[in-house]
Length: 195
Length: 195
Picture: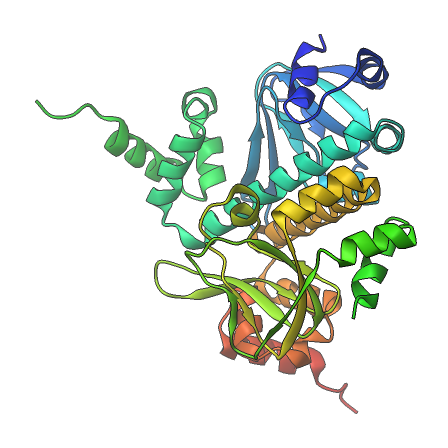
């Protein structure tokens, strides 16, 4: 049950067996059915989630009622509404399971306890947020700088399996294009070479 | 010379006098004239900078040649092109001083050395990146969710002094609107109430 999350932590830091046990004792397992929400807008976020199996989208709805997907979190990814989780405000970024999803959650109090009591976690979460910051910065740059076609190709290169796993409307809402335009881009870039 | 950066660190962690000295020995002072670049696109970023005095904009240029300002860093803020700094790639986010600017810089090797050798820094940079991630997430949400007028009011509320300190074209390029529209919004929201 904990092998994936321990492997995720072990990518950055080494834990003693006792430290690993202190960690896993703080985690809570959670199951969410496909289509259900892990977090809805307006709630207070109390958890940082780790995806063991399944897929979660982080999204927002704009003033015109259009949905924008900020991220897809599959196996081995962490997700939450960070501003709400760390500052205690109401969530503005709902989290919805796109498949039957198994997660492990950690509360803010337990995260802070871990960082204070088990030094490798201070390092682990420093590296996790450092990497998260870079990815978000790149996402912002891609949104502002790249054409829709270049954003599609970047997505295809970065997350090749998601293109077949997530509904097209959700990928279109991540790329900021219509599902019809996404369909045209897919045909253009995935058709076999002419004989 | 180091009082501001030490106060910045002291907001999150407590250092012994020896730890403070180990830290300040790793910093390099730098002066940049108004209009000059601290980092140009295509270079390798080797520093994380702390602004002692002045103002730096982080920006990018899109395919149409339009500039988009991602952030303004004034006294007490840290800045760099994170993806380039941490992964060693070429910078895509130039940094330009908008005023005569004094900075202190820290190399990646020294940051890692500090985190490993002086435990409070692991915590400090964890909290710095955690906060940075939240701010960037909110920036992305504001871009996607808010109208231009709401983005202007948010900027005005968050950074009231910047509105008078930074050239209007740069604020417009941060908000994603034309300087003319910004001028109209400023008139609307800063004019005195009618008698």
